[in-house]
Length: 183
Image (cartoon, rainbow, N blue to C red; front, side, top):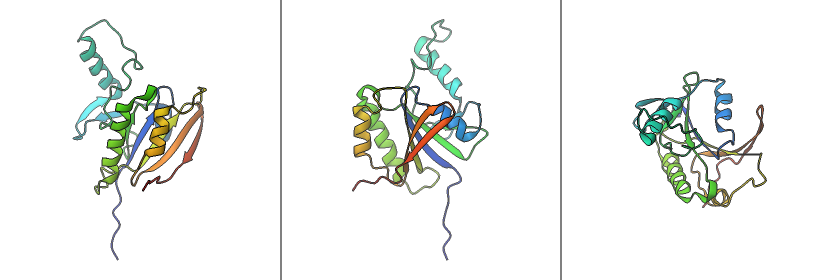
């Protein structure tokens, strides 16, 4: 009888617009209020999300600048290939994508390529296991045209897709669209 290999970590891509509740969901899953540590694609620690943001802000504004950018102003300038790991939950590896606001076709292609590459790999440690798509509930327009394109044309490979709605700070509705392969 052959032994089935299992990954030591569960790798998740979380997608969503600003204020869709991504950070709230990640912290709830990991049972923490702490900042995740950020690692580059080679596994080198960059620091915390806050440190990575501050480093990026310094590059944009100039080190020592008095200019202050809010996180929402620099939103989307992160790298989907970077891993986020909460120290209290090291068995989860998260990748963050900002979603497809205002028809962001570049982001859509970046996400598709990331999913195809990560879902197709045979290396269980690098393979994408799940996609959590967070949609805001505080808007009249729940799905944008680019999001509709994503859902209509996505091939998640081996990864399961779940749609997450953060209804209020403590209530989460999840609809699982397990393994949505398109021929």
